[in-house]
Image (cartoon, rainbow, N blue to C red; front, side):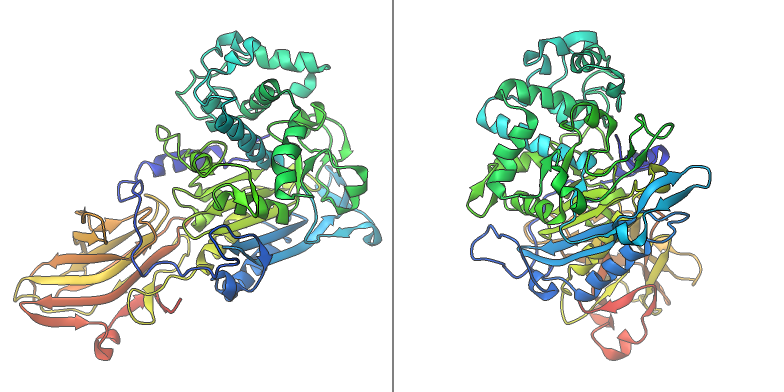
Length: 592
């Protein structure tokens, strides 16, 4: 079962990612003035998790409080129905979990009334509030566990990334699937359609026959199409090469080594009071008539496969997911247990889908997806979502992690739309990571509002002496192509023209920006900017930052604005009189 953005929106994202020309694919060495560091939780380079303050995590506490406030808003109409009945939020950085908060209800509705489009609530005494350790049906976040198990076998030599799937499962070669590779399963480029109703086949063997007989809708490697069938097929490969069932592999290779005591397939009945309920599953919105699904997997295909499936079926809580995330950010190790080599983790966080801009994908992990990662998205930010309302986002750039677990199909899947709570939480956590000013105590910040234009304007200057140059420090991270920052000038007060400029940073060649603009990813570090200015009696300069209505990046910072001409300093914002003449609309002076 998929949890993707709307088709038109995805097409827009695909087009947008094509505009990464301004630095998106480069690996940068940071300048001294970058994101503030998190305080180390332990000695060494592989922290384990513990609860702690925002300050210890190197985060701004005011924004963590806002993260909770924003999440609570989605307990109400969003826009018509609640996005979820409740959620558990977990956010941190380094070895510190600075936020771990339950909101709302884990179990609220006993049924859904389709005639009135309302939820039929349990009596108040039978409803169950969310708790920090509430267990959730992870839905497609389960795919990450299957992917890790596959990468482990690749690391051990039992599986080859570029091997044909049919070399392990001969029956898989039917219907034109003989050339599909293991990598294509992991990156959703196999050509499989999104899903098929395996639950309609009465026996396990007949379900397998549906997979064997399934014909790809595109040639392997020629298109990206997210499909549950990829990870179901990978499950079959893993079980064949290891001789162990997927739930046994999960226990032996991931949950036991990492001490994940609340993560498993098919939780026992004794767990039910601590599990968030999902959907009143009935036709026509569900493929199976099951009534309230609570303590069993929600996904119909996973349910029909006995609750153990490569694409869905894992249950877990926020802390266990945070430990898994911390393990990957540590390079595959947590405490004394290593489940992957650093090189293997690198593969999971490396884009294999460069041929499909907008659909960046590592081995199992999605990368750089603003539609749910929000401003945490970078070319190496990895994560996944689940149809039931779950998500995990890992940002190696800032060493931060975010878990949002909501029961968004409770009482029915049609109440939820989009990923607004995930985006809001990710935006706020990204904002909670401070950016040190390039010099001094404050810098100009564009903000992170959607559908806005923010301007920072210098007063009119006399550059008629010639050889005028602007110098400043610039930091930017925007949604690629959709949002951007441009430097503009006017000599008549009405017609603004872009001003080309050059940016540079230590250890890198200077970058030319002939259109006078930047967009996308810049490494989240400060750049030194220089721009030649036209000669005029009255030249006004401004920075103009524009965003669309959907998503934003971390925003833009400008610091140390200075204009010289013919050896004279025309403007220097370190001079109080000059600073007072700056006109800011939407920009604020920040002291992160």
